[in-house]
Image (cartoon, rainbow, N blue to C red):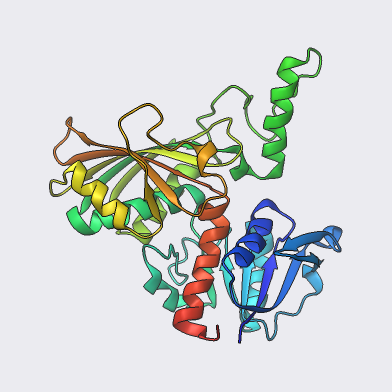
Length: 340
């Protein structure tokens, strides 16, 4: 016996990935519905070997459905997620709308699966920001061993985090640079993204942080430990898929780099590729389509007491969004619904 599952926003990058991952991981589905806005009604999407036609979200009745994976913006989520939750369908939301609500659990299954049980507060579970999700998978096992005091992270985030328009802008700008007269002006981004990097993701806040940077701080505290101090600089880079992060960690206790490497090798969701030779590390181009969060360049930081550096790479459309949502659904199935 399986579940009745709804994917909301099924025509977008993340929604399509959700359908792919549900099929790849053989999530026990008895019935599935793919939904989108009215203008996309009837668009065909793939679910394993099947082709689904999207239905109209505005007309859909969530009564009798078990789980809804939401991959739409915060504004639309604010309208439809409460309707689904009220109808008894558990919402797993990929937007930022509910992440900071103290009544809504923010879950990364490798880190805090027990938080799923708090879904009953509002019948909603939040998925974290893409840049946070991969980082906390690496932080948690190290924190359990040596207690993290402070994290300094610089991100190198792919354009797919900004959606299809962002991907198209990078592609068109790159082509336009080589064809005189066909240059493409910045529209989705504040500056040219092709052959450039932009230290600006989301809007600026009064203290000079961007909201993307603030999200990494707030979400790490909520998911891992409120005592951890975090400072972030988030940068958009001309990569289509795959986020990278340079992470500097200060611990309360000394943690040797070799022990840290062994801990991470045994941790769920992580693959360590760390050879001190040419190519002995993972880059975004190599992580696309993979479920794992890859860790490389593990080394002591001799400039501080109890310091460690590492390089963290993951497919942001997967672990940063769709995969994490499906993993939450799997935890729900095993701990709460228990049908599959």
